[in-house]
Length: 364
Image (tube, rainbow, N blue to C red; front, side, top):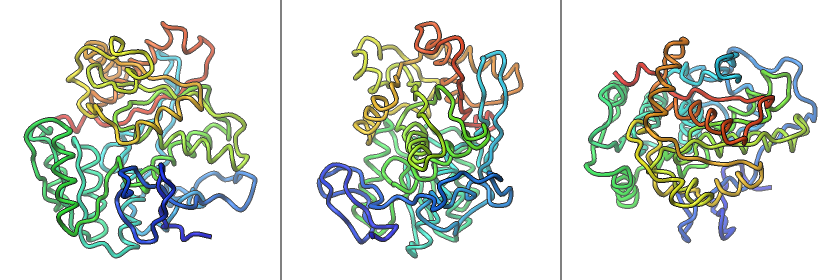
């Protein structure tokens, strides 16, 4: 059996025993072997409150070398939306990206990495910076020059170095990749690194455990690089393969209008057109794992739509009035849920879970 940290290419099946950030063919890499529980029955006690998301270590590729007690976020009823909200904004750094950061930095620690780099519009950068600090690992975080001050402060105060880049989100990625290829830093990317997706898969484990090992009918998430969307799919799939749930939920993506390549692929360019500079956390025009995202939409009878700025702003205000203090990008998923219901994609009696992914405190 391959080592837990052996990698293989998602496109050409080449295998790598030494860690590298992408295949020579240019495609993303995955773990060559996927951990599964030895016991075919789900645990009667679903989680250890001290272990957090690491309660599900049977599904994870590495031991918890770097943790802040993250995970086990609340799953609460949201009657005004006829859904359940999973409050991902209560993580240590205020976003769901801590799921990926704890696993990614645990892998980095196991490999003896001295310095990591990441590119981010804010949340992933703050998470990687914080967990790198916990691990005693240096970090450089490439960010847009326009990054929100609170997110830049979170990176700086964790001891990481923010590297501002003028231009688009794609320019930030390009600058970071250039640094990776010309230096000796380890790429802790939330888009490329398979450890990050192993971490975000814990969202699915928690949802099903909190619901008595039943999956919802549908899950609606923001969709930029697809960090949570694809991670959730992998988590639900792993639970089904373990025999812990019977069916996969439909995965429904919420993209920002004007930055909606998955919606354009599914429904045409006109369906993706418009403008949404409010949901800055998902302004991704060319997601690294686009093919995989389309595959998991196909596998779950899912969908992706583009949401305009006005709908996100209305939804954010409605969430705030009901006690959910979220950042703007977070509001794109509840806004998309309303649109999916109007289109008949989500039926009135469907059981729906929506993650609220980032805290409004980070927009100050």
